Image (tube, rainbow, N blue to C red; front, side):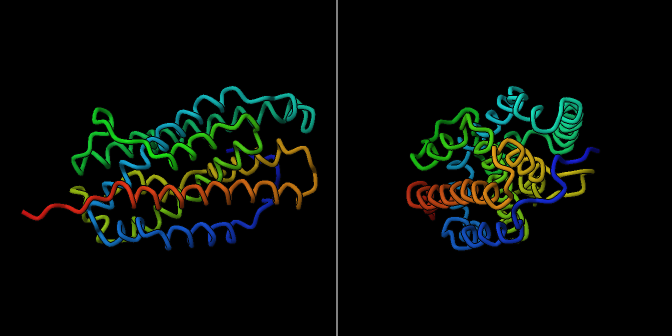
Length: 244
């Protein structure tokens, strides 16, 4: 277990969660999934797969190549060295517990007869926008986006994993990707807390209001693009099942 670089969060997480939840609850695609509509569930798993896959890779690639000098200048070499050592260990432990999130997404789709690894599916423009926005070279924006995705994943999982009609469509009676994001029993800070902590650490300002405004704007943009992608997926990929 390790200590965060900042003792208190710069954002009101309850407020951010409410905004995230409103977008999810108002999405026709997500509501249809919660009601057990198989065509919508297939569209969700297929439509967002390119983003799930690309974002997982972006995390793996970027976290290993973070600029340390700004943090060392601000917090000192000893503290930053300890933080990164313990952060890497925490992420490793969570990876072992949850497995790769991308693999969990694939496994859930496979239960419904969808092979995301071999079948060819379209990548929608709105999903491409999500992917492009997640590859920023700016550490503040990058970690804010990681936080935004964590908010989305947690709220989406909480909603759908508690929707009996959705869960019952999976032969196992479980959505394992969602369960991984609903699990909060790991020791120490969560991914979300680490993401927000690092976004704040890399911000050049020491003013919490300025930092919070920047992070909040980045997170809201992430949520907005997710909502747009969900709408396009619903409009483009939802195909009513044929009744024989």
